Image (cartoon, rainbow, N blue to C red):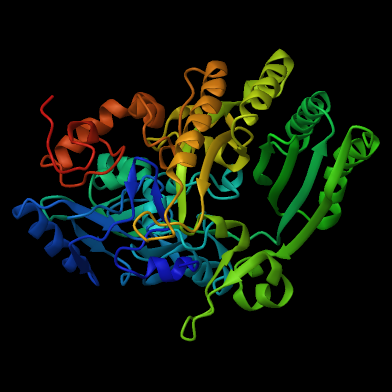
Length: 516
C-alpha cells in the first residue's frame, strides 16, 4: 500500500485514502475494464439506460475523490494505454501546418508517456510532475508541469481528442471539429464526457534539465520576514522567466525550503544566477542558518525520466517498484508522502505578479508569515504564467481556466494531512480529532491570504473540497459558457463529480438531482 503503482492497479485504489468529512476511498459495486473505445461506449450506454451512478478512473490521482464513489459503476481505462508518436500530425478536417505530436490513450500515466516520448523518442511533451498521474485526467483539468512558463499549460498543447459523450456518441474534437467541446475539454473536461485518447504537440528537447535546492532557517521572526522578502526580490529579478519552475515551502519554524527546477541551463549558468542570493544568505549568518546549503545539479534532458540512468546515478531521488514482475516503474521520492495520504484540509490561491514589488511585496510577506503560523505554505511557481512568453499566454487564453492564472507568478497551496492511513482499516485509521483541528488551521491560513487577495482564483484540482463560489474561483468568466455546454453535451447529468461543471444541481454524493 506504499507503492502508488500497486494502489493504482487495484479496482478501487486511489492515490489518496480520503479527505476529512469529504470522501473515503471506496470500492465501486461493479467495474468495467475498458480496452477499446467501444467498451467505453457500451459502459456509458449501460449506465445511462439503467440510471446508474458512473465514475471514471484513469490514474486515480484526484484530490477531490472524483474517480471514486461507493455503489457506482466504475469505468476503468487502465488497459487503454497505447502511445503513438507522429513526426507530422494534422488534426482531422483542420487545415494547418503539420507538427510533431503524440497520441496517448486514456489509461496511460505520465511515466509511460515520458518513457515513449522523451527517453526513447527524444522529444518533450508538457505533462505532469508525478509519474503516476493519468494523462487524460491531467489534460482535462488544464495541467501544470514543472516548465509551464516555457511550454504553457498542458491542455494548451492539446491538438485533438476523442471523447464519448453521455448519449454514447464518439466525437472527434479539435479547433475545427466540435470546437466548443474541444475548448471545454481543455480545463473542465471530465464534466462533458469520457476522453478515450488525446493527441498532444511535442517539442524539441532542451539539452538539460536541472535543479536548485536549499533549506534556510531564520533565528527570529524579523529575520525570517527579511529572508522571504529577499528571496522574492531575487526571484523577480532572476527566476521569473521561462527557464524556471517548481516551488518553495514556508513553515512556522521560520524555515524556507527551496526546490526549483530549470530547463536549458548549464550548471555554470545556474551558479551565476544563484550566486547573489547564496552570498546574501551567507552574509546573514548571524540571523540565518542553512540546514542544507545550495545544491545545483544538471541532468541530460533525455535522461530525466530514464529508469536505468536514475537508478544508477540518482537513486536517492526516486522510489522504485520492487515487485518481481514490475517493469521499470519509479516515482519521485518527494511524491511518496501522497501515497495513502488522508487530507485533513487543503486549498489553493493564485498570487498576482503585482505582489512581487513595491508596498505590495511587504504585504505579501506579512500575509505569508501570518498564514504560515497556522499551516505550511507551498508556492508553486510553475502553476502561474507570469513570466511566460507571449505565445504561451495566448495559448492559455484559449482554455477555460480562470484567466487570473495568466497574471499570477505562483499558485499558493496550503494543506495538512496524515499519511499511510485508511479510514476503514482497523488500527490504521486516521486521527479524526487531529484532523478537525488541522482542517480549521488550513481554513484560517487561507482566510489570511484571501483577505489580501479577496477575488483570487483557485486551481480546481487542488481546491478546497468545501470551497464556496467554486465555479467562479475555478473558471471565472468562463463558467456561464461551460454550464451552457454541459447542458448541451450531457443533458442527463451522467458525468457528475465534486466541482464538476453542473454539479451544483446534484447532491454531494452524486446520486440525487436537485431541482433549481
